[in-house]
Each structure stands twice: as C-alpha cells, then as structure tokens.
Length: 553
Image 1 (spheres, rainbow, N blue to C red):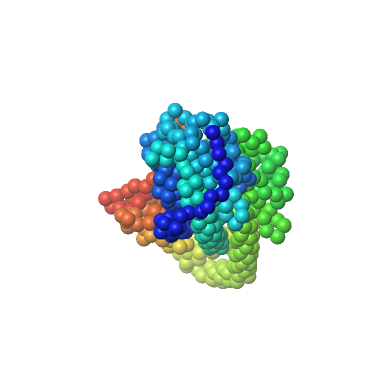
Image 2: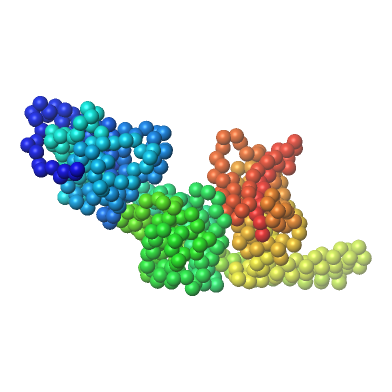
C-alpha cells in the first residue's frame, strides 16, 4: 500500500551532527555526477537503506535523462542492463506527482512493475523529490531498510532535509558545469578560428572544425558539409569514432533538410536513423542529431552536423545554444579565411602580372637586341667556326624567347584555365615544392591515372601529396625525393585502387617524434576505405623515409 506522508515534525536535535556532516559531504564538490553520487551515498547512510538512486528528470519533463545509483554491484548492474526511462510505473508517477512517497512493500503497489528477474529484491521504498530553483530536478529513491522494517517518519524528515541541501548542491554544480562547458566551447571556437586563419591547407582547417565539434558536443560523429558545384551539400570533413566512408557524399538539393539549412534554419532530430528526411547511408547507427547552418552576415557557407549514437541522450537546450554559437563563430572564421585567401590570391595575380610585364618589356627586348647584335657580328666575320658558333647562339636565343613567351602566357592564366588531370596536378604540386626544397622531385606514373581515378580520390591524393612534400621539406633535410602514382594497385578487399608513394633520402622519421601529419594522411585514406603507412627511404641502407597512401578509385 502506498502512502503520501504529511510533513513531519523535523529531525530530532540529536540528529543535527549527523545532518550537518551529511550536508557538508553533499556540498563538498562541484562536479555534477560526483555530487549526485555523494547525495546517493549520504541518503543511504541517513536512512539506513541498502539501495539509493537519483533520477534526473529530462528537460521536457518526460522521463529520466540520467540515473545514478548506489548499492547495486557491477555484475548485478550488468545483468539488469538498460537503466530505467522513468516514463511509466512508480518512477513515472513520482515525476508526475512530485510528492514524497513511502511504501512498506514495493512489490504490493500496483504502480511498481518493470523490474527484471535479475534485479535485486526490494521491499520498503521511500521517494523524495529534489527541487532546484523552485523546479523539479529529479527524485531521490531509497529502498530496503537494512533493519528489515519500513522507512518511518524520522527517515522521511532526515531525507527531506538532505533533499533541500541536495537542491542547493545540484544548483551550484549546474552553474559550475555550465561555466566549464561554455569555457570549453569558447576554447574550441578559438582553435577553429586559429586553424582557419593560419593560411594552411583548407581541408585540414575544416577537419579541425569537425573534430572540435565532435569533442565539444560529445557526439559520435561530426561532419562539415559545403555547397556542391552541382547543388546540394557535399561532405568535406569527417570526425568519427570509427572509420567512415561518407567523405565526398553529396546530399542532393531535393532533400528537405538541405532546403531548410540553405535557408539558414537549424535542424534538430531526435533519432536520425528513423527520420525520413535524412539519407539512410549518412545516418545509419546514429540517434540524436544537430544540423546547423554555418552562416554569417546572412550568407550560408556550409553546414555542421553532430550526431550521437543510437539510444544516447538528447542534446540539451544549453548544448544546442552553445553549438549554434560555435557554428556562427566557425562561419565567421570561414568567411574571414575566404577573404584572406582572396587577398592572397589577388596579391599573387598582381605579382604574376608584374613578372609577366617585366619579362616581356625587359628580358625579351634585351634578348632580341642581343640576337640582332650577334647576327650583325655573324655577317661581319669571315671565320667559318665563328659564324657557325654565333649562328648557334642566335638559334638558342630564339628558343629562349619562345620559352619565355610560353611562361608569360602561363603566368596570365587563371586557375580555371589549368588542365584538371591528376597527372597535371601531381606535376604542379611537385613543381611548387621545388622552390622551398631547392630541387625538383622526380616523378613516375603507372597506369591510366587521368582516366580511372575519380575526382574524390584524386582530390584527396593531391592533399596527401601536399602533406607528404611539406613534411619532407620541414623535417627530412633530403637531397632527393621520388614521387610515384600507381593506378594499377589492387586493394586488400579486391577493389582497384591508386597508390601514392613519396620517398626521400633524408634523416628519416625520428622515434617518439610528432606524428600529426602522418595521422592526417591515415585518416584521409581511411575515410575513403584505404590506408596509409610509412617505411624505409631511398637513401643509403634504407636511409630517409617513404610515405605510402592508397585508396580505391
């Protein structure tokens, strides 16, 4: 039989030392989960209970968002399995009524059901609500009086006093957690802004956005999507607990979610796997999901998706607010980085125009004048050997003038004019690396690299090549670098693939050194279903290092 007890006369004077010690213990820390555990332990001691638990009510008041317990051992806990949801039965009634409840025999109450056969047997029961700032935070549950009898008025009074102190402790812990959470998101925003404005590789900067979003939101995966050239949104960065192959996937423009995001609206999903608006391949295995537009000054630059695993808790209101602010800051940094790249690109074009003018107006004219002088000297000499040598010099000058004119034309070309073949892009990266290296890397191609390698794999291969050449320049102290692109490779799973090998004769990869660049290469390959590793180089006795990156077409 259930009993909703009336307020008692309060604790006895002899109980005050124990209550003071209990309140001191409850309020001794600021970390929320640890505070809840201390409340459980202290309540069990005050009421001499075998079991104690706190159910934290969900933000919408529907069931429990968290359940912290005391007294159930590890093996019993494993057998019980999933924690109670609090939407029905006795726990649900306590949430709805928010009044103390005392039972002499838990099993005799019609609202008590749902305990599994592996659950420890319980008889007496006491439930007391915990209020924080006038609102119900959760309930404190006690079961099985150790003396064997029911919980009495004295137990109820003691636990009521503890519940009031628990409300204060929980409020303080909430404030502390909120402050720490805001601090973490601010630090994450700073890291993203620094990465985007550092002038480094844009793909790596977007990867930082995804990794920070996943870490801060406690998500299983975070994705960055940018507008695709043919419409819709393309996944350009993935941070996930497990290797993912969604990199490069395009969500079509017909998607309802894409329309909402490009219009600047947030999308919050309770269970991504069951939402018909989302792509099944993209959301398989995920539950609560936030999809936020990266927008600044009314312009949507992309989208940030954060997804928790199936069955995970929903994102709280505070988490949604902080994530939205993070997305706005990331969008602003993206816009600033884009403007910075535009300025740098304009400066490069202006410099190229100046170089082209100087080559045309000064160098070619001087070479032409020199050629005229040599031709005049050739006509004035009677010595055959001299005439032949001067004629050869004039021919070389003509060839040089033609090469300079070709260079001028290339300098005046824009990015859209450059051929987009993989072979050409590999050669371009090697030529660009020759300036800081002081020598030009050699190159070798195997198989039809321009015709069989898809654009997504090609784009990531070029990024991997750029990373490997950059690492060689910064760390290898090499005098020779060989670049090989082999499109005749068969992957371990039987698929056709392409393999990039960048080998040098430098100092090699030191033991215990930083591996961030190599980790980036491996992550990029795994996102496509490939792999990356390193080994001996091409120096004497295997000196130096070789970095291998491969992925399916």
